[in-house]
Image 1 (cartoon, rainbow, N blue to C red):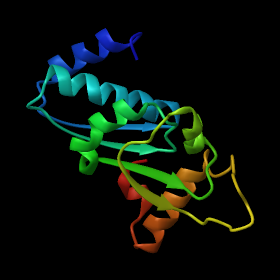
Image 2 (image 1 turned 135 degrees about the vertical axis):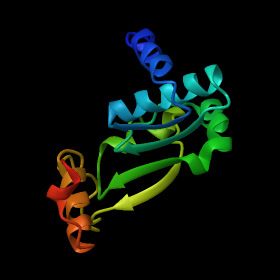
Image 3 (image 1 turned 180 degrees about the vertical axis):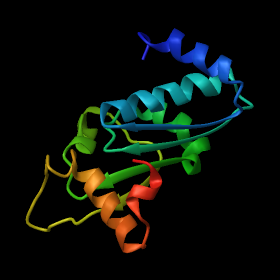
Image 4 (image 1 turned 30 degrees about the vertical axis):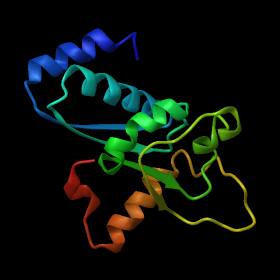
Length: 141
């Protein structure tokens, strides 16, 4: 995060926005959460939310405790039996932050799946949109 922080903050200042949604997948999800902490300290009055997909654990207990105030502002999406959200192990003191939202199937005989990580999220989210009758092409993706 520190390698791109100055550029990121320049863009934040240029935008003059006061409402942000930080989104990331896998390691990028962890970076978006680190950016969340940074922005909250620099701009405490800015509205901010986060959505992570397949986030790896990025915080120790003390860091995760800081997020309790913002628990409802962060959604942590986990697809099926995605392996990556189990890394690094909680046994080593790492913690997740945000409200958990599970999507996709969780076969009982499978412990972990790399396929659920990439491109699993896109496939499952596309299925959800189709089931809701939303034309994916109309969303511009």
